[in-house]
Image 1 (cartoon, helix red, strand yellow):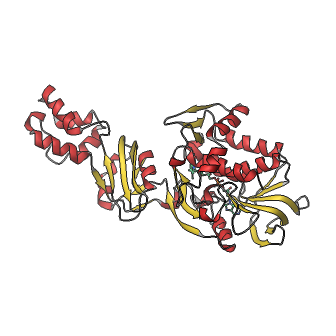
Image 2 (cartoon, protein in one colour):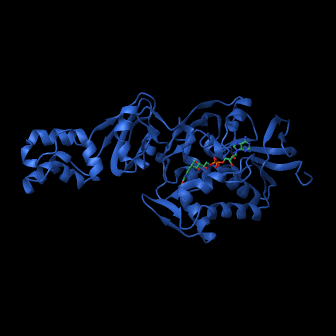
Image 3 (spheres, rainbow, N blue to C red):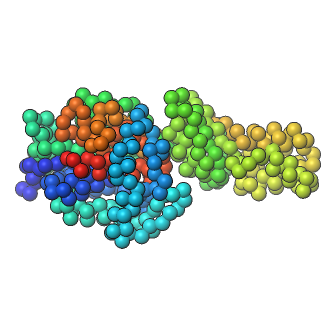
Length: 400
Ligand code: FDA
């Protein structure tokens, strides 16, 4: 292609959230920037995010909302380009948005608004973006990099890797960023699917099959051997394969094969005491009727032990306390997760010990940068992962 540049200041691999943001920031500093992506369209994950409305950041974003082998690593970038900075950019572009819940900010219209905003920022910065442009080979030169792409060779002073994680391979996700890291001797920590639904064991799955689509608020908890105990109060959703919903996606980040996950099905108090109070008021009410006021009738029937649907007055204090305790510590042993096919993010990735937390530059390989999800920084569900993409991209964009 004749207008493919042979020389740029900054070459960015990956035209997703982080790559486009970095291109805009670097371009606005006057750097010549080229972004290449092997996919046929840019920003596919932005478009599919947040159910089509892109949960682009979170009011309460803080370093505590991120997992990493080094929990301090994300602090600098998040502090220097905050959720408020991104919100200001969204407002500058007149994009309407709203808080859905728990500080999560979504577009009123479509995710496309966020992608169009990033592309407009790239255009204003004269950053070029090329799709269907995979990278075959990267050579480190004495000054900069020679990158062999599907559209030609390009020499760049700085090379930014923004290829994302492994989730949703059908959307163009690859492990190429990890391969580049390894090529230059950087350590890559083991990766696994996170923010992902659970597949439950066959027996439970079959027993719950009628309940698919039922949701209820829970507290989901899981004790990871090295990360400690995680606990999230949000909705749980029964699916045909197992369990999903925000509480399940969140706790999946703490889960590894063989660990149990505990669900408190009555997160607002003591269920035993609640049933005792109901017994005092309505002793003739059936237990199922009482539990159906907390959950859907189907869910209540599922959780009620066989033969236990009797009037409340027939239950002793001890029996109600025990039943309450059991339903507040419902233990599930997931068989697996749904994996990268449906996961929102990838945990692990390029070891942060290899990178400067100020600039995202490799400590070993000058001029090589890693930003966004390819780095071992993973956020909670709720706009935190995009905020990491914006913040880490901004940190690199200011110096490349
Ligand atoms: P991203 O994946 O955005 O971009 C990487 C780019 O690199 C892609 O364009 C890809 O084609 C390209 N690429 C990959 N391999 C390449 C190669 N070999 N050569 C060239 N290019 C290559 N987060 C959030 O905060 N709020 C939300 O609402 C959601 N919702 C959501 C829904 C779904 C279904 C998913 C899968 C994920 C989310 N996320 C999310 C997570 C969020 O999408 C994710 O964390 C960011 O997109 C990461 O940004 P990156 O730029 O790092 O990667």
